[in-house]
Length: 304
Image (cartoon, rainbow, N blue to C red; front, side, top):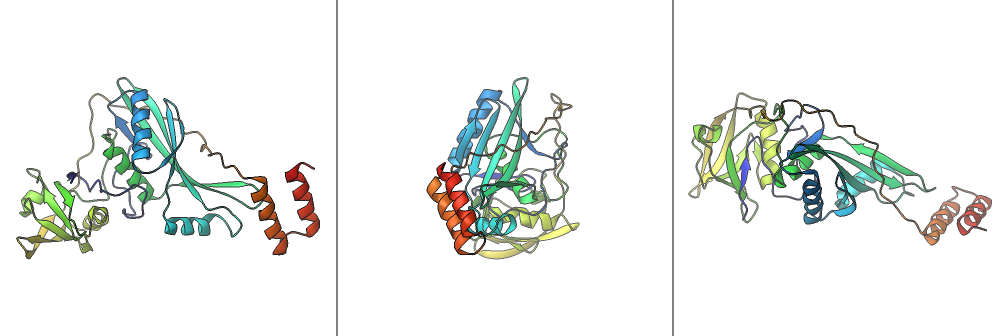
């Protein structure tokens, strides 16, 4: 089972863009955007992101050496909530997209991500809504981290506490097992050890790695916070003095130029004439449009 490092929080072993991450950004970049630095050239970075999308089950919509667009899988609950927020009973199910813009930085690459949802309304209009919530940002930053990227210089971590340990999920999702305690870290100072199973952090129950960000967000609000662990089958409680992860520095990249963020790229959504006719027929049957309006729409769709 893959071991992960808890620095500020956790790169959780879950599929990104699921609603399991805290409602405040854990990594605040200087630009305020969702971005990361890759130690590879533009083309190699594009390939890495495209493969990363495929590996987590996303659909590649478009890919070039400087841009990758993916459609991210939505859970049933996400789709229902998005439909309530965006559309109506006549709209298509919402889809979720991510665009990664890639720019060269010498031998490195800088990648900024933009996410949006879109749905097609009853009369063919495509409605889009940009994703700006913190859990979206945290999940994409997690995605970057899992691909080996690192945060831009100047990135700060004001909203989540720092522990300094690796972890691996337990087989029954009953806490996480701590590994590789970092020297001088809050975990070491508090007396945590390799093999301890962390089950609660700042009163947040930890079932799996996905709960860690929420716990560390709560831990950031107090000078001290309590953790509950299981060691050798016995439950223990310990108190940790809150610390924050240091600001990211990189002497080779003192200043990053701004990147222009173009308008969202819309995925092509094909609708067959039969689907269009069925949609307008329902509008007619429900009294939304008249029979005459339906006939006009039918003639336009069929090219009559």
